[in-house]
Image 1: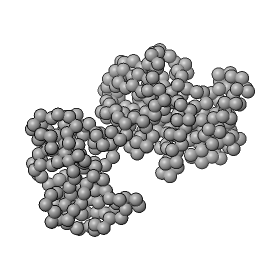
Image 2: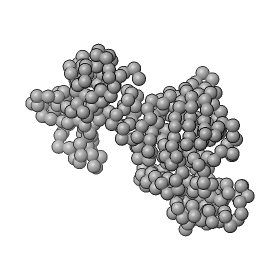
Image 3: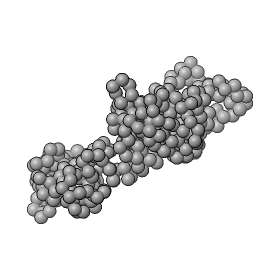
Image 4: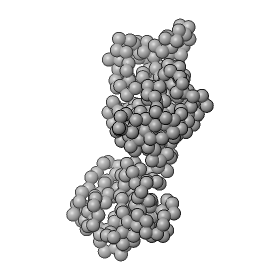
Length: 349
């Protein structure tokens, strides 16, 4: 549906986007994920029409978007600040875009009523934004965006202004609404959990380039570059050289078991990544594993994080176990994992 082909954008000496190419399908919930300053918001503004790229094409159903003014594009943009009119009621805020198009009053009332029911705000139609909670204001902004029935809805950090519990509720609400209204959603976020819980596919950005595009599970379990492995979720990273199909050879620890994502030449620099929940802690007397001592145990309700200092490794190894941990700080342990639970990738990606 949406095709972005070789889009580049510079601001002086700063390269915001460097030949970015993406394809987004009809009805997809697509996330642009990356740290601040990586170019994801610039791309969103180009799609919306608020920025002009230096090179590249953007098409929607084969039609060139770059030739159209922002108000002529079948696209809605939901701002991070929501940008609601404080002097207008909820119903008036939602109806504003339709009234600007001079649609018949009866049609405006009908469409506003339908969308307010969809987002669960029918009872609040007469209230003003100041009388609403943060989550309710977010739903008003969403209703205003979808009432015009755009082909594409762009969301710029839509949940960043909400507290943690409301954000979790609104993630579910956004996903439900997206399926219900059938509009293609493109969301910009720097929050990995938000992207993983919302999106059908995620594009990970770094310094104006796309490092990987994948479904959340594949992105988490099979990162294809050191940046993605380190940025998406917690990971334990070990450097070494490729050594056949069964692992890498580390100067500090010898052979470390893992599964290569691609064929790597023997002796090539490689990185092994293993998730905390794949780490197993055993007694120091175990024959296999890396010896270390427990630095800290943190309990988060459903899961405990255990930091283990392994001599020769730059950062503590992080393990995650369900529930409360029986391991105490200061305990001598060994950390180990199975080869199929660790991925190996080239360093120069």
